[in-house]
Image (tube, rainbow, N blue to C red):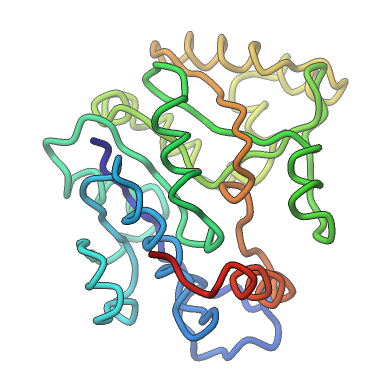
Length: 257
């Protein structure tokens, strides 16, 4: 059984969400078909039999009967994203494996979660990613940023799986990975060395290179997982994503379980 830590904090980025009611405290609280974004993400987690406990980190306005009905714990965020994630780990002191996930993936499905937990390689840390062809098959009308590598073109997902002990033993690196560089592939490449950054710029950086370098630096086994479930990568980043996601949810029947 894997426990989940859902990051649902931070303030609403008004520059990314013009036209959205500015009284909404955070992105996770944006309503999609009448329910906050975080509800859709957590509902998918709760519908996956492989998920045990769920801890949601966010502001008090997220606490609602609908969310509580999904059998979870809601804790206040603790400052920055790294401190908030640490609070989630501290709330699960006896956990072995953790799924860390952002609250802004409302198209998440139980099947995507089950596939990641069951088929990802055995490792201390696993980072899922999606191929460009899969992303453009499922979401052809949305803009994306892909990393070009000799293995193909990929985009990262808003989730990872890790052993709790491995994260805490190397917490300074976790802080870096969860910090400002997490949105930049080049920034992540710089994190593991200028030579890697140059290889990325020249499109010579392979997935295996990153796995090997991260494993050596952190003294853990770090692996990537090429998932076919693109809902793991479909995060709501801007105002236009709201209507886009609502349309897909309607086509699904506007509910889970």
